[in-house]
Image (tube, rainbow, N blue to C red; front, side, top):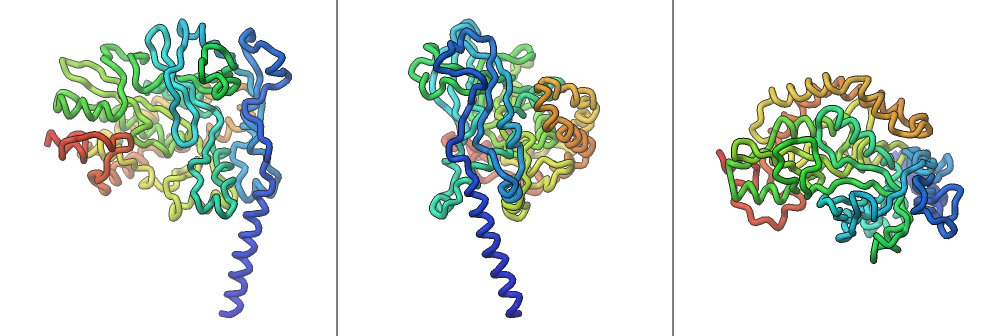
Length: 423
């Protein structure tokens, strides 16, 4: 017993030393949205159609750091990519900044266009410092959280949007741009200029989808207020939402809380039917390996933080409060039918062709592996759908407000589920 204690102590000390040793390879002077072969101070970038940039050098690592903190998508983050240049004055007849936004890791800028659409510039580079726990800062482990962003693929959103459009699902239609400093950014020029962004439609907008008879596009809190005002005259397309959620399972997007969705309101016989609109694809294809991330993402530690593998590790952890809120009392048959539809529509050809929108250098890095995983998950989606349904039922009605809806003054039944007031 005495020797076991010594062995355990040596193991713990060795692990702690290894963790801190992996932090010493941090790039202390990382570059973000770094142009290749041109000097921004000497080039009028707005005159260019495109520019080649490196997203960031922040995640460069030696073999030991990769062993401890994961290989992830480090190579993709530092591989040059050629992207179009965004001129604020010419896109959409002119874009005007409205206000800053963003979550805990993404810097964003809301824009309005002269043709009355609302867009968002969302930074490709992430800044997760607010996510670092105080204790991690105090003991010098901040880099583990910051470095974890390398588990996100910088250009996954482009593939996901292509795939979802091919099978009739709604998305914010992200496009990749380099945004140089320019007068069109107004007071945001210094903060947002000379960086790499996804330009996409906001989830509060006029109709930018292919759907007809659309009244507007709203966010989840607005949908709930409409429901309270008009009750049975407002519903959601449950089958469409289920299909959207099962697609999330196929692409490994584990972060799908209520603020990650917009709703397209379609007028049908004097009633409104809301169709789910997926936004924010930062965590699609999320992949972790390495000693530390593998421990953190274990189902017994952070169960929903799941690596994108050929099989889903633990479906119950992927059930979101908004799933329970919108899908209570929904027949299992609808889940199975939508899973079968996904299997038919998401063909091998569609999956393979989607990755052709990436430059060859990025396809060579990750495409084959990702394609295999998508196909594998698609083939198992009926089984996942049954488990998904079972655990929505098992977890039951929500007890806390949906994310982003905390300030709503909803009637009691509507606080627990979307259709509770109709029962």
